[in-house]
Image (tube, rainbow, N blue to C red):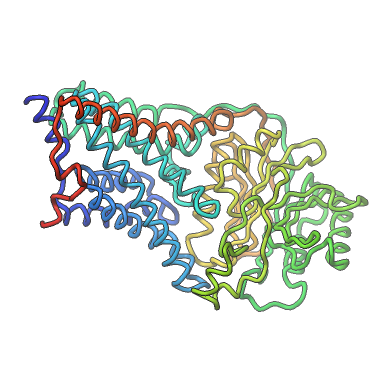
Length: 533
């Protein structure tokens, strides 16, 4: 086959448009199966494969349609837990926004499938360079969606689906973004190997095999043991949901009751979850007195969380409380309050659309600016409050500041009996593996776990149960490559892939102007040739 005919074949749609839409609709639910509570991690590869196959050969319009169908079919299932208390409007709005962003991010992927083989029809380009570019563009889309708008929603990253798979270890080298990149690149390489039509030629399978080998053969980066910290973590299961009916101090009393069985234990740190206190201890003497008494009883510092008011601003604050000290002795404010949950961006606009829902959100939390780190008697503890666990920068900053373990305080009460708490727990497990540090992931209502540096569960409390965990939590020092080079990896995969695509496009334009190649009008205008079908 000639070079021109090979390039032309590579640009033809792999599926007719109707079949591509169907494949995209299947891709979303299939990908969701890789995440908890099902957690069948190999299905992430199947979902990505369906999504990529549906995009090959599409025009701009076809890419937008197929990308939107994929995004909608995934997010409408994956985050249905939003409807638990808030109903369908926020669920549809967020799913719709994410689907639109998925559709926009599908366009660069389609252009890569069209442009790169046209620029260089060589087999090596198809088998190596094209899958690498596709993996980078997919990862770049994830990174963009995880940062925009309003700090983004990095909830459903492909790499996060692998927290209990043998592939998770590589995240300690590359970060979650790098894991996503390798997974998508491996799938794209397999697709190109099959498209090449030379299955029996083992040389054509080599790029896909190398990508797969990197995923399964790289062990976790070893961090250095530095002792243990005896931690008690209490899940009070109090009435801490937004719409729960409760009497004054009901949540505080539930936490105190669940803490009582730990009396007499020798603790280095006692931890309560996010929202484990009804009132601001900086303003409420009754709450402050209860914490003083608890610190005195256990002779150990307390790590607690509450909404705090300082001046005219409100924060979601984790506080270290010690016996006989001017408390709190240290605190950390949540870095990324949840838009439409903990504050309303552009309130004037959204109140005109859904005034009843927006009116429910009375507090306007201010983003914190202090480090996600505290010192507990010489032991560095990294912090992430609730959804902050999904933001890479918060986790990496804690490690670089000297964290030897992490404490993630959360309140999942607004999502009782849904997959939300298990999805968030999977993110916590991936953070343990990524940083090589233990994690105490503590929820007001569960599921709570103490997770080892290798991702193994050391202690656990099921959802909907009042109780405590008591563990000798392993401490670690030393930074994993993910923490050191993670930001650079993101820049290279995100902006580097996009700039690479632009460079390919410019090279094609230059060649076209020199009269060295011709492009059909349908491709220049972006009209999908499959639309009439």
